[in-house]
Length: 107
Figure (cartoon, helix red, strand yellow):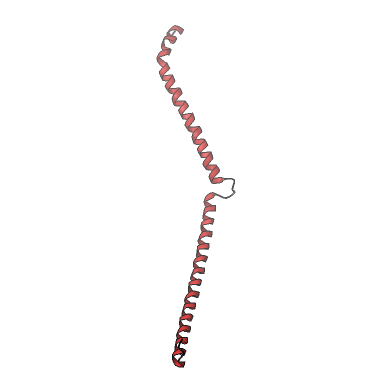
């Protein structure tokens, strides 16, 4: 095949060549974008820590659960103290009322 014959066939292959260049360009762009996204994710997850983020989150969750357990226990203790105080106050009021009736106090 002569150069003239090859040159006459080139224009017919330009659309195919353009399509290949377009596809190749898209693939390179997509891979670079994915690499940037993965880099961002890696920075957010790893963030220079020596331990994995999941481990840090699990430890934090355990600390929060323990703190809530302490708070529940403290609230339960406060409620018990209030019940005791209420019972004592009611009992004291009842005894005072009995004394008033026995001794004839007008109060």
